[in-house]
Length: 338
Image 1 (cartoon, rainbow, N blue to C red):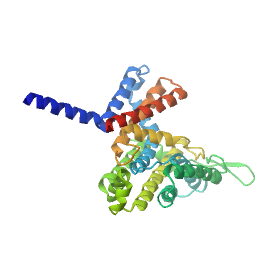
Image 2 (tube, rainbow, N blue to C red):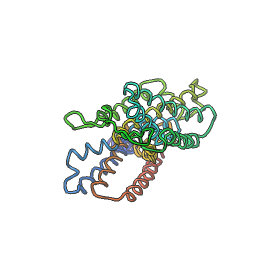
Image 3 (cartoon, rainbow, N blue to C red):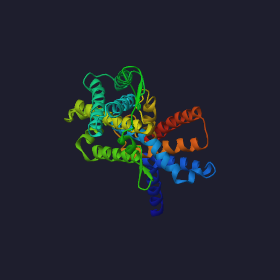
Image 4 (cartoon, helix red, strand yellow):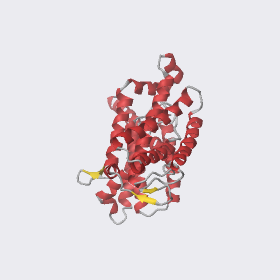
């Protein structure tokens, strides 16, 4: 009899583990890494440089994913993250490259503009009851237009056009070189460290501060949260403003990596950011999930892209595979919640 009870208890424990989003994300990560081991491109997968480059390439998406996590937990969505990255990239480049503004001023200014755009999306959704999909879709188009307007539709590079039509070339600002550099003996990039910093900030907000508890409450049941005294409108604006702040930081990193501000930067990045959050295991229904799941989702996407890249898989196949993986991730979520 005791043996039967023990067997049932073990089975229940295994079922709970399998239902855990973290366990499913870890299993997905293990599967992707196993693919890399099998299809290692003549040993390229086993070199540290491959993993370092993977982290560098996926860090900008991971920063966007941090903001997307907060918004999705609040039962929202943010389609404007790619466009906000683009306008931030252009603004930061204009301030530092063309105007010679100190990075100590340019960085806070760019972050503030990104947060303002995000707060505007939150206000449209929270205060005027526009569906988050529509509000952020409008902001996506608007912000892209702003990026093209202030840049004149041109990339903001070290070639500065003069009044007579000629060009004057300036040096790349030192802050660009720093953000694009590697530290710790060249083993990790500054962009990756900034991504990890965003992860920590998001964890503090969601798990250690009152607004984080309110965000989970709103995502779980907005009406119940309102009746419990949660300032729903203000919290939603805060969630989108935080997402906009992370978008601005991602735009700064993108500009540093490309050494220019491109008004077209960030196109379709919102899809990758959503994929990262969903594949990690955060539910699109809101109220559940967390930043550590997004960290796992970021690494999964990063390794998947790197394995496909080192094996010379075409972009079309990569996009189709990513789409299929998103569908599978949502199906696993539904099965885990059943």
